[in-house]
Length: 146
Length: 50
Image (cartoon, rainbow over all chains, first blue to last red; front, side, top):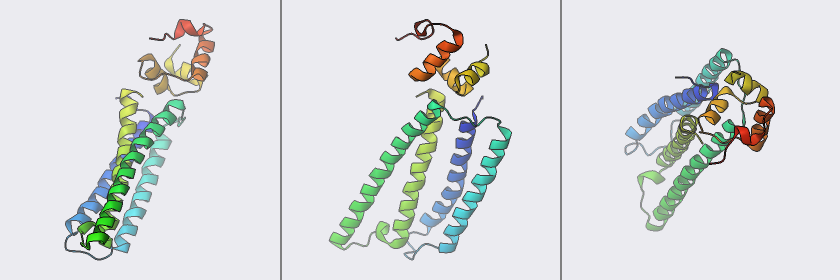
């Protein structure tokens, strides 16, 4: 399959995001009902630093292997379109979180989502899903047209 | 003329030229005029509005 530099770069970012954040969030949500404490600061720092290092290594490798990293109007249009989908999803998630917090305050229910641990990881999950949508829709538009 | 040569002359990627050929992307007026300039043909000989 003939893939452009942008497609390879997006595929790499999508893969790294899914594997690293998927692994972290799976672990976090497995402990969710039992662990109402604040999220582990060290684990989260390791995740972010690991993600950044892996991204830099893979993107540098891709940049070295591909001579041209030219970005044209089609790339910008695809990026803009995908950002719109991603933003829409994130906006819905933020509204859901706000309603959840309001309901929790109003009815004094200590729901899973409104504990600091739960809220932190749900917000992280929403952010990661928004990123996955952004990468995924970009790859879709590169293949199917925009 | 190869797709790569045309892409370089117009200032877009080869994938964009492929997408235009396959009718998966409608270029901006600027790119359309640059393509017609490269081929020294009027715009309506290269692009058709469906």
